Amino acid sequence: MAGASGDQPVPKVRRRLSSRILVITALAVMLAEVLIFVPSVAKFRYDWLTAKIETVAVAGLASEEVDAGPGSVLGPNQESALLKALDAQLIAINDQDASRLLARAETVGIPDVQISLSDQSAMDMIFGAFDTLLFGGNRTMRVQGEVGEEAVRAEVVMAERPLRRAMLVYSRNVFLLSLSIALFAALLVYTAISRYLVRPILNMTRSMVSFGANPTDPDRIIKPNRRSDEIGVAEGELAEMQRRLNETLREQRHLAELGLAVSKINHDLRNILASSQMISDRLAAVEDPTVQRFAPLLLRSLDRALHYTQSVLAYGRAVESAPVRREVRLRLLAEDVYESLALDPKSGIGLVNAVPADLLAMVDPDQFHRVMLNLCRNAVEALTSLAEDPSVVVRQIRIGAELQAAGPGGWGELQMFVEDTGPGLPEVARENLFKAFRGSARSGGTGLGLPIAAEIVEAHGGEIKLAARDRPGTRFEIRLSGKAARREPAAAQT
Image 1 (cartoon, helix red, strand yellow):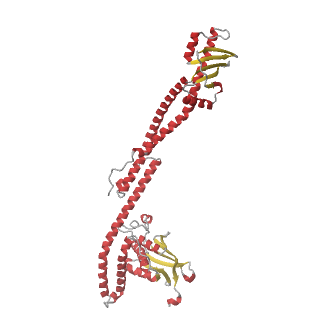
Image 2: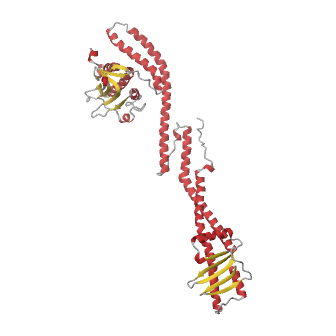
Image 3: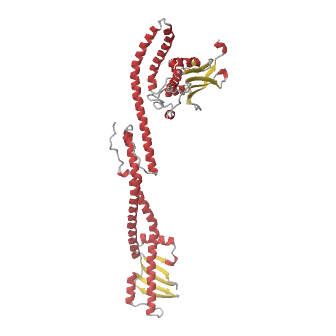
């Protein structure tokens, strides 16, 4: 078949599920890192400024030890060193309501930003951090804050550029670390999902594509793994579905081949039956009483055989011809079925006709003859298998019928049965009842008798079922609803 090669198309890399999961995982981790970065960079700015204030406080306390006089300041060299160390323009300290200027550059810029670390809330820290990152290139800031428990307040005036530079370095490091974590986490997730999810799904996809190219090839059925999770269940269900579809297609192919064979046989069989009918017509002219007795039966059998050959092609197309209904004496039809069985009197099989003589059924006589004949032949085969069993005393086939739920005009439902005293149906036949080629109860049987009977009964708007029994044997019950039967008036019988 075209496209049945082993090389199946594989989705492009950019369309693979695993590639999408890799990107999504990396973006998710990066988003989480961004949410972490915002408070962390704000905390970094706060700590950086706090460190400056603490350094100013320490320098102020150290200057007091050197010179305890009020308003004492550092020497010029010390001021220059301290300002250079803090990268500041002005440094002051306020201790117990006494302000002291520790150091001052020759030129001090006008502060553009006022920052009080003691009054900073979480949101102030976050907004301040982004303000510094975005606009802190050339501004001057004045920072104040309290240090220690003695309410020592320090102040520093400095350029914002060093703080911004430090925050940019910190942000770069956080970004690189976040990117590394995101890629590592995404790679781990990608590997796990690719191994335990994407790869099995890809295998199932390839199996479906391969199986779809040639579903009748059993070697293309997926071989499921022994996993007990959802993927394992999906593979098992896919394998079972492919197996059932494979069996169904093989059966359909078998039916198609059977239909072709039947059509060929039917062509020649019609010619043979036509010749046999001509011979039977001549045989009917023989005056021998035995011949005169069986000749009509032989002619009717040949007529039915010719009719069957004409309808066999329709059945090969799984379409049974529509029934042509008319009123039929069901008891006479049952007697005709018994005669068609042509049982040997030495067989020991009794035939009981329990159909009321006045029961009229609205059915297609030829089709219903086939239904009862198929059921009776199955019963004969079952009873014949008991011929060598001396414990079996009664071997009997019984056909019965009755009128139910009669309404206006006497019309009602038809309930009939065909039963025997045989060994009953085996379990395999019960499981595949009314299924073509599967429901045969004996070796070598075609398994078509019951499916044909079921199709004819359904075409009559009825149903057929295997009745439960508390004794050996088989009983099939047929029910035709609606205006299916009535009692013949007594005047008409006479």
